Amino acid sequence: MMKLMLLGMVAGAMAFGASNVYDFTLTSIDGAATPLSSFKGKVVLLVNVASKCGYTPQYAGLEKLYETYKDKGFVIVGVPANNFGAQEPGSNEEIKTFCSRNYNVTFPMMSKVSVKGGDANTTPLYQYLTDKSANPKTGGEIKWNFTKFLVDKKGNVINRFEPAVTPEAADLVKAVEAALAQ
Image (cartoon, rainbow, N blue to C red):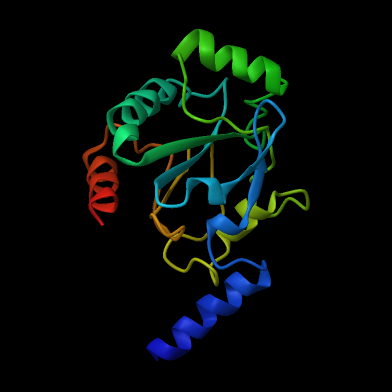
């Protein structure tokens, strides 16, 4: 049974030509190619973000979490998306300015993408993250902005936190600390 489950996970990842998140590249908010492999050896929190959402104040908590753990090998990657309620309508430049002015965001921000599973334009990383065969524990459609995927130092998705889970939530902080301790 376990062997069959592992084969299914490998087959799901291979459908994307990926064995983990390090096999994907995003574009930074400034337009530079950003291979996620540049974060090898770090614990990564991938978050689909939006500027006009009820959860937007989580930017402050994300920045605080980043500042607390960045020197211990932790990075947050903000991924703007306009999939939910058109709550991220701005250009990359507008998003960058908003994050800097309102929340002093210093963690890496990527260019706006589509993260919705059924969207034909969904970025491959988010197709992979939400695929149940590639990520049986954490896969499934993203329901709203500020869904968080925790990735271990080897690039494996190890946990998922829904939008209502704030960056300060004990479960999220414990998960980050446990991943850093590995």
